[in-house]
Image (cartoon, rainbow, N blue to C red; front, side):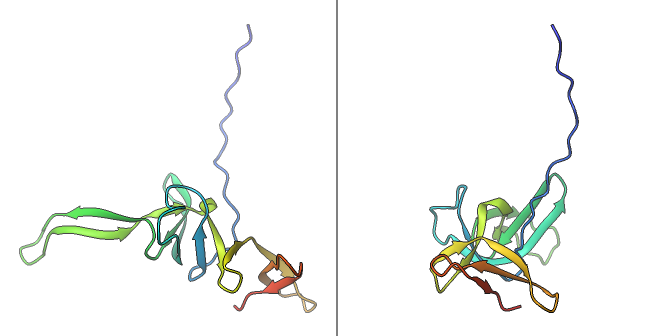
Amino acid sequence: MATKKKTSRAPRRVNSALKSGDLVMVIAGGHKEKRPNKGKVAKILRFEGKKKDRVVLEGVNMVTRHQRATQPGQQGGKIQKEAAIHISNVMYYVEELKKPVRLKHQFLDDGTKVRGYLHPEKNEFVQLAS
């Protein structure tokens, strides 16, 4: 009986057109149904240890951390902070459409690369303001 040979494969990196400050909506995972499920991207974590391709959203996925008072004048206690969500679980949210859309890149006639999305009804490319 032949045994399978294990091959080491590096984890795939998720390509995403998201940037800090974009309004996104959680579309999968534990915070999909919780409110708020929309927030601005505070930070994008690309290569942070083993947990790659994660985003931190403002006001979404709040966790409680207990902090000890380490210095004589410092206060200890419970601290609320945002935890990271995998980047594949969020999508860019368009306020005018009231729904998430998939971002795309397109080259203009002068050769510049711009971000945008395809409008669902009109089927035309809508460029995002930079």
